[in-house]
Image (cartoon, rainbow, N blue to C red; front, side, top):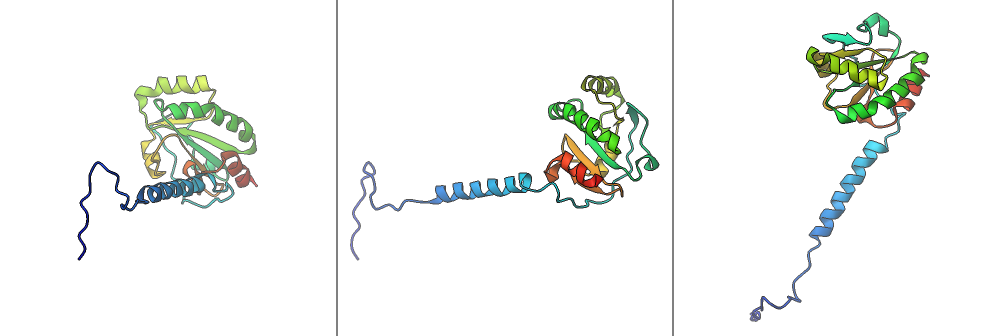
Length: 185
């Protein structure tokens, strides 16, 4: 058996195999990012599928209008915007929601806002809605409805079709105006 020479730790080891583990890890990480982004951004908005029946929309109280009833929502496309007064992305999304409301309300789309915040935040809720130009009913103390929607993050939008089925949520990706146009056909 041949004797292996002793290695001087201060000299580079020419015989050491280089590892490709770092390159493999980077490649796999990049692949994961690409696949994730394709599932988020690449999903066509025409790919609507039922998520199940919409729950009864209930809240402890309402501002900007009366509580919607099953009869008032029957046969209509409904957009539910779940938000909170402390949620920066929610507040930044409000002007876009106002534009969508202006674009689709006359076509029979009903907009509803929901927050789990309680009555102690009612004046703040009203103030934010007024500043943003939100004119549709917003329910406060709507935690139970949000649980039934399986809401996990804010802001989140749900679209319910004319048959009472949740057909789209923010997490589905795609473009909300395209979704609404498709459901109105």
